[in-house]
Length: 179
Image (cartoon, helix red, strand yellow):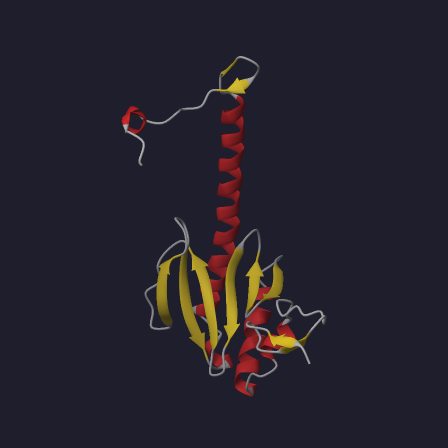
C-alpha cells in the first residue's frame, strides 16, 4: 500500500487519506499523564480560568492561555508539566528553571510542576501578574498603533496624494553596486 509516515506525529497515513496532526485537544495532550500530573494540570487550569476572561486552547504540543496575546502556556511532558510564563520582569526564584527575553517587553520563565501542591504561591501570583501584564501590554500596543495611525495621516503629501518617503542615507546611495 502506498502512503507515508507523518514527520510530526509519526502516524502512518495511507495515500489519499486526509491527515491533520496539527489539530489537537487538551484531552489528547493530557491523556497520557500520570495521576499526580493530571491533578496538577487540573489545578493549574482551574487557577488560570479563575483569573478572568481568556481563551484556552491546544496548539501542537502546548495548551495556551491567552487574552490579547498568550500570557502563559503548558507543555505536558512525561515527568512534569513545563509551564512558560510571560512577564515584564525577570524572576529570581528556585522554581524558575530558565528565563530569557521573548521580545523587547516580555521575558519568558520556564517552571516545572510535578505535583498538585506546587500550584500555589508564588506560581499562582506569577500567573496573575502575567494575566494583568498581558492586558497592560495589549493596551500599550493599541495606544501605540493609534498614535502611529494618526501621525501617518498627518504627514505632508505631494503630487497626487502620495506620501513622501525617506530614500535612505547618502552613504548608502554613494556605494558602488556589487558585482
